[in-house]
Length: 338
Image 1: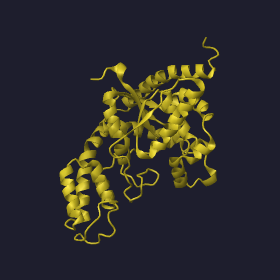
Image 2: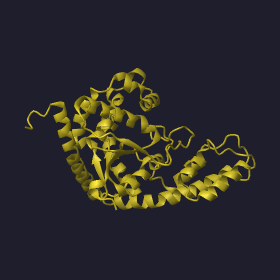
Image 3: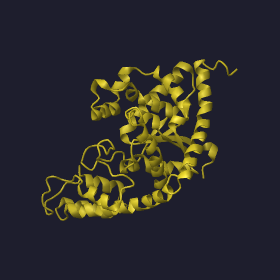
Image 4: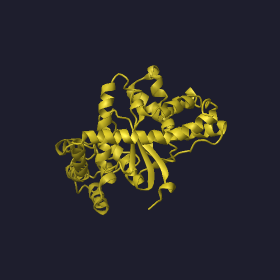
């Protein structure tokens, strides 16, 4: 057992713009389950960042805060091991974001490939909200304010972590060693495609399977999955590479030897898409069944959910305060602390 004082600090989070899905599970949540056993872990519900592109839907964001917390608990994140923090209730993050704005150029923000892709999806063009363009800076402040050294993320978020590292290095170079430089922690599955074959599973694109998806809807979504368009008949040789069904089986099927045999048969035209999809339906139901059950249990404990989030947010804020004291001292804005 790792002693508390030796634990690394880990921080990650999600914007409450909708329910969490299998992409979150593969890309970050499974790694968070591991980290809560060996790190001092904080998980941020980033409601302020959610408003950067949903500023006209505050009620929706507020409702989704509880939904995202339910997803965390349903997956198995333990409030006794992981601290859940509501971003809007930690003003120290917003303060650090203001200081970080001075350390990043507009050109650097516009080069961020994750932001460029999201701007394209949202068709912002020249009308991108300033808050959206600068939310990677806010994300860097999230990480730095907690002194986080480990950040579990999906592959698409690596440019965000690199920008956070650049900002921290700039701050430490200009003002003296003050902030911890974070490292990204990637899971075994770094990116899960959408069920339509698009590169990324996304709430915005509507091509995701939510963690709370019931069996009947799960079956419908899997049966609609993109496979191999050249495999017209079950007896036609099929391609595993680029096949969404096999990407999901690679991510979640625990029977690795059976899966490799299935791939051989698929390539030889000895098995069809329907059989492969039925296997995936079975695998995903086995995976999601305990998650659904835990979610149902937690849904009946609304008062406890609120307490978990309030107490976690208070602990999180206490964590950021000494970091911000050092930041203010480095910036010479600690006028009344002497």
